[in-house]
Image 1 (cartoon, rainbow, N blue to C red):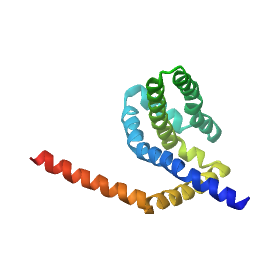
Image 2: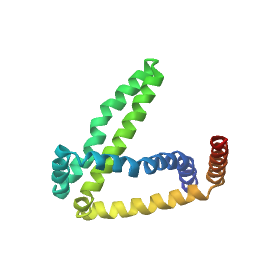
Image 3: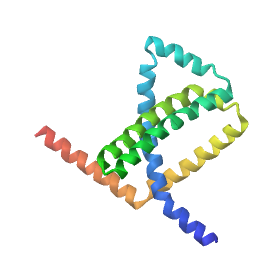
Length: 164
């Protein structure tokens, strides 16, 4: 059973790593974008209220975007099933980006309250450690290094082309 488990984990490692990399790629820039929007008059008040939430209310609010986007993603899957594949995929990607932005901002605002929950703080610490280990594994892989080299080469070619 251990070999089967190891095989299945290895099989899931790359897709999971790609999802996490996508989240990492979008987390900070999207959170900063929503922070700028949060400076608008009405949103400042909302952000202040989110920061003041007690731990379990912050946890409920943190889970809300996933629950609200679930019907949207299910509708997108229905569209894919109906043959409107590109529309369905576009909705899923947009929902993922919007969801990541909202969750990133909510987490930034509510992290102090969430960390007051001992079990949440322990899980977050374990998750962060596991995520860093997984990302280090990806970044050490030959596929990652080849992709980085290709990206650098394309940037150099683009730069030369732009300069004329």
